[in-house]
Image (tube, rainbow, N blue to C red; front, side, top):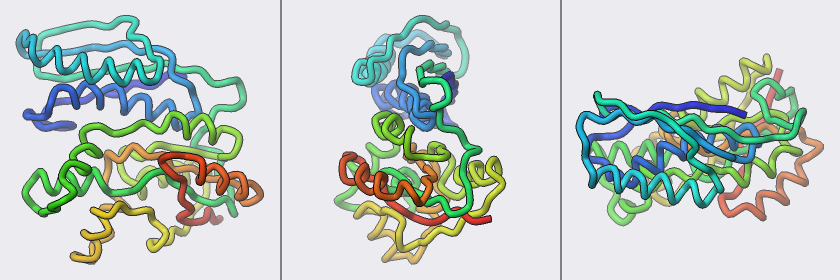
Length: 254
């Protein structure tokens, strides 16, 4: 399994973002893609474009990238460095047994829709960073959710034999689940009251009545999977076992 993502300063992260967080996120978004295929990470390559040599920034970037790589057993095996506007491109490689990879096209009517973790936190963090909302008491949590997403690699590998289709939530639940449904030729009904919300987002929804972050904000890097109803027992058992949780939010329809 192979995936590639690019992060560009000013587009995917603000210029003042901690370089440790940039290094972490550059690898994390790729590991999230591997997780959505049920693949186990193996190695990565890195293309790094910098406007000028900056040893302090590079030290922080390497620390963030290296810690996450070590945690998931990923080796950095090559890449390239160039001069230009700050951007980071990572290609990650992983392994999954033939015929067991999770795809977007396997969902069918009656399948149950599940998500890991909580939804909308990164979008709320961005509102806070832009000065459009105050979330006292939740700043550290929200900053971590936006800058240091936790790729759900363990969940992805354990979902291989349960899920019929999967995708990671980089662009938001509605958009990314939409990719699965289009590939599978299906629709779905989601239940807002079932969406897993962090205390920070629950407070935001209660204050504003705005559910859009949970449905459409990007950068959460959770997994969204469809699971046949016949395997619901296995899904609930796994949900209780995963640190990140696994929550039923809807059903696939014709």
